[in-house]
Amino acid sequence: MNSTAPLGVGEHPHASFPEGVELDCGVTLAPVDIAYCTYGQLSAQRDNAILICHAFTGDQYVAETHPLTGKPGWWGRMVGPGKPIDTNRFFVICSNVLGGCMGSTGPRSPRTDGQGAPQELWGTAFPPITIRDMVRAQHKLVRSLGIERLFAVVGGSMGGMQVLEWAVTYPQMMLAVMPIATAPYHSAQNIAFNEVGRQAIIADPDWRGGRYWEEGVIPARGLAVARMMAHITYLSEEALTRKFGRRMRRGPVGGQGPEGPVSTFGDIFEVESYLRYQGSSFVRRFDANSYLSITRAMDWFDIAADHDGDLTPAFADTAVRFCVVSFSSDWLFPTSAARTLARALNRAAANVSFVEIETDKGHDAFLLDEPDFDRTVRGFLCGVAEHAGLS
Amino acid sequence: MRLDQHLIADMIEPRTRVLDIGSGDGTLIGHLYRERGCDARGIELNMELVTRSVAHGLPVVHGDADHDLAYYPDHSFDYVVLQRTLQAVERPQEVLRQMLRIGRYAIVSFPNFGHWQLRLRLLLGGRMPMTAVWHTPWYETPNIHPCTIRDFLELCRQDGYIVEKWMAVDEEGERAPWRRSIRLANLFGEQALFLLRRR
Image (cartoon, rainbow over all chains, first blue to last red; front, top):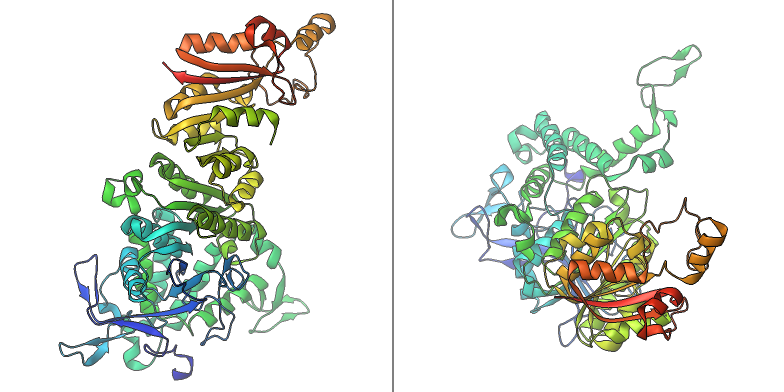
């Protein structure tokens, strides 16, 4: 399994925090490594830093070739010189989330004993983490880079949850935030999908009660099924129809005989083949226990929970400028959730912009070519800079 | 910027908080923000215009007068502006009430249904009048609550709003000279513009 095992902790550029992070669950997780990438130059005034928060299965490799998959950065079309998040102007930071598996401390990191000597891996003993814990770790990283105040925090999907958590937990730490394709809480439907993914992993005999790493295996089938299911939720019906329709291709089991199908699963639909590919490539880069930890963190996410279910007090008296973006065909984080957020922000008298981008590409639209979205990001950031006198 | 938007801008003190309902492409709030130092924000129903405004760095939310004003807190703006839209909302009285709950002042403009051409056409032709201002047939017009200047003044009196300023303007937004007489304005003014405040 070594050939398919992701890079280990420590091989990605990272910052180390021996004092660790105090988690919502009461445990202090120590030490903590946070792997990160940066793009552009921090200005002398240190006022041009934008933190990008990645989505669930994303990572810190925003705008460069991924060292593991060899694929281009996941937001290379948004971040770079002359791009909407212009690295000629802004210093961009993106870190792998706490609980992740691309260099930040997570279930695949070794525990240490009292003297700091590495022990066995955390595995399922990794303490339960929340979105706020991820943000606390990012906050440590940002401060360690000598940044007192961020220009903006930007992110989509689970990244958008972190963005909202930033605005609530550290409202003095940034001028503006862009929560994209996200919601102020994880809905019952969101939790339900996550649970199916988790059950697929746990049901895989290779999961071995979460100690698969002891025997050099990974619960590849369960993890792949989880990914296949989740991937459907990232796309819209229109996008699937456009990409695959009902087209079929010769399956691995054998073809069609002259008298019709010789096997129920002989030929497969192209959409099936696509999902299988998505599943199998995912297991090479993502850790199953990270999947469990992070989906659980998302499920617990509810900004209003600390305010008796009322979203507005969470944003009371905020000076942060908000730009809420949703996508019309996103049914995982629908526009209705974004509207709830925008209205709560209005109630808090916050400075808020709210845009729904018309697209048929579903939840994943924020990663894809959407010129209106690009214009929105660029224009909003320019507006914030103008307002702050930084233009 | 249209001439009547200049008239609106002239009613607004610099460095105040302004909410423009139906902010369109953001012309007015852009002007108020960049030239007058106002904290000017918009609500707009047309998503293309929302995106264009935000892409110009202006704070605009997708929404409309009937459904989104309820989400703004009391007294959160100095001025709430509704341009040429009152006749097209579902509940004009409620929209006005919300505007003066949210803002200290409300600035409202609407096309005057009392204009002599409309009166004459209905009288002589016996059909729903069609003019440059009222140019869509009755079965597809969004203007479901047309009113005259005198109707509007009566509503203000009834609901206890103080008319700080009012003026009649023609379609191009040029200020019309009938400001001394409400009856003349109601006959000759194509558009009406009001600055209201709570009692």
